[in-house]
Amino acid sequence: MPEQKSDSRELAVPSGRFTRFARFGGLASNIAGSMVLSGAREIARGRRPEARALLMTPENARRVADQLAHMRGAAMKVGQLISMDAGDMLPPELAEIMARLRADAHYMPGSQLKRVLNDNWGDGWLKRFAKFDGRPIAAASIGQVHRAVTADGRDLAIKVQYPGVRRSIDSDVNNVAALMRVSGVMPRELDIAPMLAEAKRELHEEADYEREGRYLTRFGDLLADAPDFVVSTLHADLTTRNVLAMDYLEGVAIDSLTGAPQETRDRVMTLLLGLVFRELFEFQVMQTDPNFANYRYQPDTGRVVLLDFGASRDFRPEMPEQFRRLVKAGLDGDRAAVRRAILEIGYFAEETAAHHQELMVEMFEMSMEPLKHRGAFDFGRNDLALRMRDVGMALGEDRDFWHIPPMDTLFMQRKFGGVYLLASRLKARVDLGAIIARYL
Image 1 (cartoon, one colour):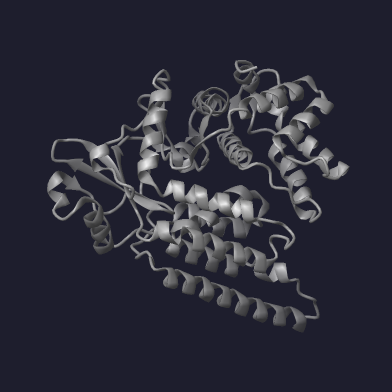
Image 2 (cartoon, helix red, strand yellow):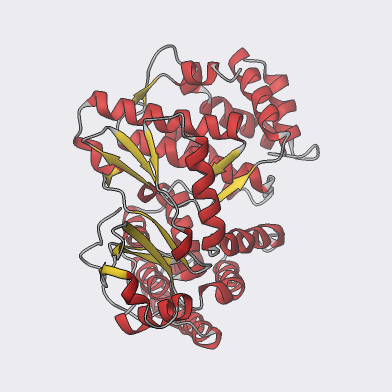
C-alpha cells in the first residue's frame, strides 16, 4: 500500500451540503476578485486582457487545488481527473499545481475517524484489533487507508470513506460543472448533461465499498491463473458501504521504477498493457481508473499489485467485437473500414464535418503506431504522445466539434491513455503487436 505523503496534514472533511456549497461560492468569489485585479493591471499596461488567461493563472490554480484538496469527495475527484487527462496540455506551472491533487490529499482528524468507524462498526470496535494505526498510510479523494492487525492475527488495509462524500456527490459535480461553464473552458452549446449524469453515477459507484469489494473478489478470481499479479483478499466481516477491509500487501510505487533495470520496466509494462487488452477482449470488465497509485510492485517476488477497484465497470457485450474490427482495420491500413468502425463505436456521427472525421481517423492511426511496430516499441524514444496531443487540442479548440462518445468508450480510452503514459514515464519497450495478436 502507498506510503502517506509527508506534506499531507490532518484536516477535517466538510461534510454538510451548505458548508460545501459555501466553499464553492467563496472559491468563485476569490477567483473573480483575482481576475478583476489582474485585468486592471493588464489594462494599465496597455494590453487587452483575455478572460480565460486571467482565470488560468498559477495563483488561481493554487486556490482551486487547495480548496478541492480540503473538500475531497467528488470535487477533488473531478480535479484529479482534469489533472490526469489534461495535465500534459497545461502550462508547466499549472500542471505542477494541479498534480498536487494526486499526491496531497489531507486526512481526517482522529475524532472524525472515530465517529465514522463507530457508525459502521459500533462502539467498542477497537477490541476487535490487536493494533490499529490511527495515521493513514494513504489518503485520496474519497477515503483514506489505515493499516491494522485484527485480534485473530489478520494483517489488513482498512479503507475508510470520508463523511458526507456520498450525499455531496451530485451537488459537487454540478458546482464543478458550473465553475467550468463560467470559466469558458466548455462551450455553452455543448450538452454535457449525459456526461454529468455518468460522472455522478460513477462516483456513487466508487463510494459504495461493498460494490468495490465484489469487484475486488471478482478480479482476484479472474486473475487466479496469472501468478504475475496479486490482488488483495476481501474481509467481508469488516466491510460495509463506507469501510473496505482487505489484505495488506507490501509493494513500492509503480512509478518509482524509473531507475529500475530496463528488463524490469519492460516486463512490468508488458504485464500491465497485456492486462488492459485482456480486460477488454476476454474479461469484458475493466478497472478504468489509470491512476499510478493503483499499481504497486513487489521487488522480492516480481509481482504487480493491483489496488482500488471502485471504478470497475462491465462493458456492453458488443464492445469487444467493435474494437476488434477497428484494430484489424487499423493494422490492415484500410481507412474506409477504420472510418466505418469509428462511426459504429460512436467516436463521431454521420453529420460530423468531413475534416473533423479525418482528424479522428488521423488520431486513431497515430494510436496504432505501437501496435503496427515490428518488435518492441520504445515508449521512451518517440513523440507519439505529443503528436496525439496536438491533434486532440486542435479538435478540442474547435468549438464546432464537441461530440461525446459512449461512456464505456471514454472510460476505456482513459485507461489506455493512462497506461500508455505510464509506459512513457518508465521508458519501457513493449511488443504490443505480439500482445494484440492473441485477440485477433
